Length: 99
Image 1 (spheres, rainbow, N blue to C red):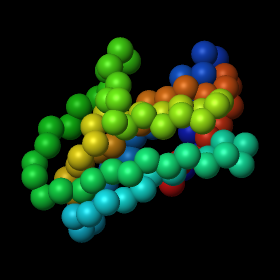
Image 2 (cartoon, rainbow, N blue to C red):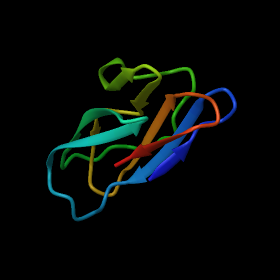
Image 3 (cartoon, rainbow, N blue to C red):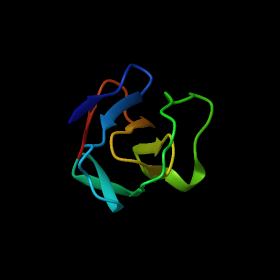
Image 4 (cartoon, rainbow, N blue to C red):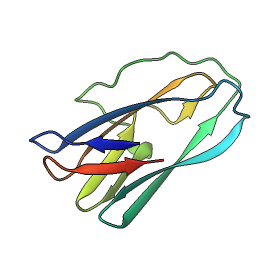
């Protein structure tokens, strides 16, 4: 999915994990100007609570940064059906591709 940053460079993206996804480790990739960053997420069988990201709080274990793009996730472990909230910073008024 292509995600556009605002005039300050902030970007927010949400992605629902398919309910049929098996437990394990998966990679979320972000691409900007042929630079690819990836972060590993864990899908578990445990129940977690869905929350929208807080602008002031980031999880240090889930931050990826390669200038001019950095992004973080709302948590590091998810269950099938959860929503992943990705927040980040890139160049203002530009796009990044998440897969």
